[in-house]
Image 1 (cartoon, rainbow over the protein chains, first blue to last red):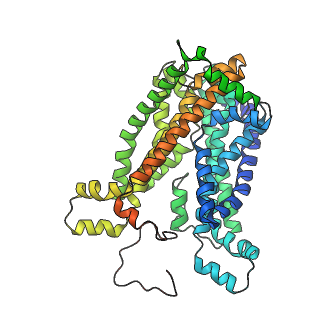
Image 2: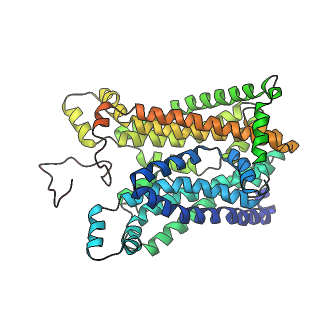
Image 3: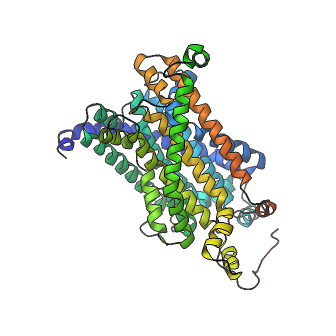
Length: 229
Length: 247
């Protein structure tokens, strides 16, 4: 505990750096993967190709990706941007599958009735499919929040500062408290972002009470929902 | 792209294929550690997950365990055990086992839960004992999902074993850290390429296995629309009413 009090500034600063790495990656991966997920849902061939690519991407170990990316992007190895790109790629690999499932879960009858009452293809996407897919998309986003925040710490070993710096520094200087602080801080950060995401979901989608389908999808991710059905 | 050619040249350099710390030795270490960890973690997580999935008891608990453990930053766990247990294989193996448990546990209970309640009721009505029910109904039907859990656990282990080279002198990750220290990008990249290849090959093997373990009876009906059906439907009494022109 003493270590924490005397290094509160450092922890706070690293937390902000950590946020600056993970939040853009989370948002980018969500924005990019919703259309990809929709495309995967739309056609049989695109489903196989896109989901297969995502599975391949997801199989690549993070440390190896961090090192293999700079020759492709031309960025220096220790550039935070390099890490953000890698984290975004992992995020995409995770959400595309969920978002394809989310659009699959919108019933065909509903889509047909939307067309019948005069929605255009674009209008139907924004007005019907996206809102109905929302709760499952949210559950995918929650998985990505937790995994991205945790994965960002790995960047510390190649020299990109984040809360992971507490692990490498604590290990080298033999300070247990520093590593434990880092673990707790990372998990707290993930929990707070997850909670914010759930709250945003409630505000944006007041019609979605946590039902069993989303609860099941979320259940494998983080914590049981306090007010689960 | 030139850097990639240099990385591949590093892999193909005969000097890196013999002696201590050679590519075959590191590769073997990596595979060996991953296999040991997978066995240990499976021995803990699969029976637990099966018990939870079969009885339906302790589901909340195992969801919490697998969810909570998943939020643990791998590097933090590795370095913490590294400090506690010192240099050697003990620390990375324990840390890797802890990190491999969530996907295995989740895969096992999700696999058991995916079995239709009606199938289980039917098996029980035919007079199957609990163990028969597990061995001859739940495991075969849930196997694709269970194998899926083992697949993601294995990928996680291979990835984290790379990172474990930070605290121990083992595995393909050694090349990455050695290259980082001496600013030798060829070695780093060569090591990374080897790790990526290993992960992709193992993933491919699991992808094929996952297809092979689908029971023949399930495969026959697989083409039917399975979307948006609840994972565990209640027993149906009487004839379900279908409206409209569903296929």
